[in-house]
Length: 235
Image (tube, rainbow, N blue to C red; front, side, top):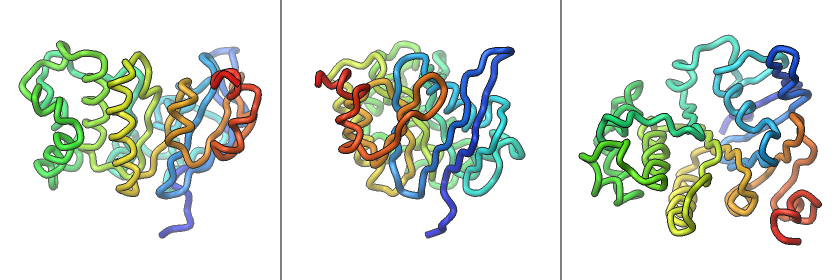
């Protein structure tokens, strides 16, 4: 296994006009890890993952598998194994579930049918609705479809922005179980979450982002006693 981190972020800064959204952010994710980026609403989590995925200009350094993000294209990042499941889900509502899934493999069509079978095994509900238009799905089914489309790209590095948002507990259990199975496949995962309980359950390490910068980092066990986490956990 390479010693090069899958993600290495150093002194990251992002500004919108005169507003500083992120400053002095350092984050590292090693191969096979699941890393959580947690924090309150407005902490900068979505800006962070948008930037890492190549959608925003930045100062500092972001390297994915040793390659500077600013020096490559989003398409090349996807081709090299990064897939970003946004909070918006970004589905094509007028297309069927299966068509949306197959779009995930447009840069990597080898083994597409096998991956489709794996996604349906992971989310049987999607197979039941394979011919249904994506725009008619429930919120939980849409989240399954977004995650399934990400898996269709055969990712090495999967970035999830608020995967638990708006989900009923029973659907969240399905997403959680799927994520456990994904991490067992040695896919490197970064989860940006306001749902602290969900992040603590899945992450090997966590970064606490507040007011656009990293305030604390550590293991789930180590961060459970912090004031911020305790406030969400009822401590």
